[in-house]
Length: 165
Image (cartoon, rainbow, N blue to C red):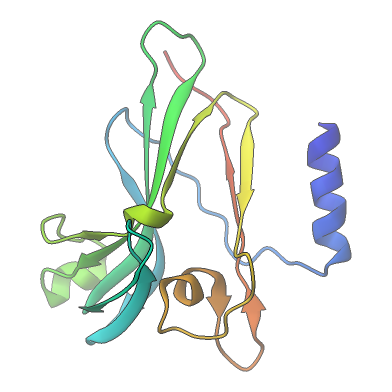
């Protein structure tokens, strides 16, 4: 609770505001996506590969999001392993795109910047960019920048509230 209060104080002093809250009920082994950007047409995006080199891909239409998967650890009560991966999912068709359903085949995972961690109820992780990138041509810029009249940095707070046995 002490750490949580310190983080809240620092975020408030920086003038942050909550733009969106997403609650997920994750079924063991089944991923869920948090939509970051909806692409209506093709777009070039650049990212760091697993080898550490700069690579590019043409993506769209579809979504860029954070795919989150949780799996209970066998033999450990109250602990799960959480996997967070940036991903591009191509849209299957116009009606499905508008209803928020996305095809899973053909997904492009940006595994070099994904992460895994163990969490218990009450645990949280706050993550954001190392530095502000005001662009939408890099994966980092797309995930952590909000382009518009008022530029903003996006940060994410992932909280484990419960693990159901």
